[in-house]
Image (cartoon, rainbow, N blue to C red; front, side, top):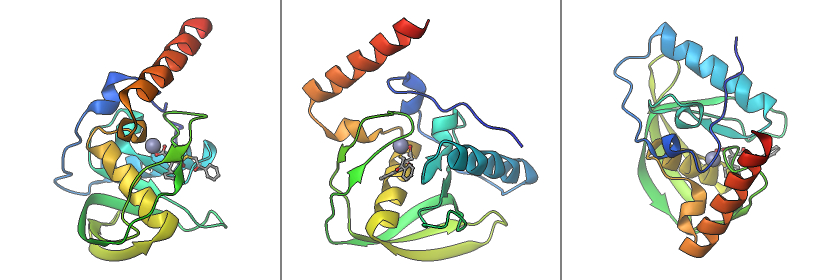
Length: 167
Ligand code: K1U
Ligand code: ZN
């Protein structure tokens, strides 16, 4: 068991595109375990492997109120989408910054679970938004990158200043 370090925006490594997982091995299951522990400890409702500097298509999510419904998505693929939503989003890699992003309201996603078994999930509302947010991480995209260049520059400056002050 290990708590993993979460990369902080504007770390360039957050822009890495993750690779497909060729096989769900014990090593992948150990990563899933550590990511879940890191997400619950943060606390957050989702975490993509990219955020812990592992560039494989692995996501953990638990958007339940009871924090006991872990969802593992390996090699996720959205196979259907409909509607529009704009939830207020947060990100463990951009702490303290919240805002809306255009997302689909309902999605159908196909993925492998931690046993390597393919499953299909229909999601809506916050869960659908969270899956789309995490899948963006796997493509190297952080949610603030939907916003204006000016807003992104201000957020980057704030985080660079914070980093200088702790070094
Ligand atoms: O990707 C991440 O950094 C995780 C992110 C997921 C997310 C939240 C909201 C909308 C879209 C995606 C978070 O978990 S931010 C923290 C958060 O939302 C939260 C923290 C504590 C309790 C409840 C929510
Ligand atoms: Zn995020």
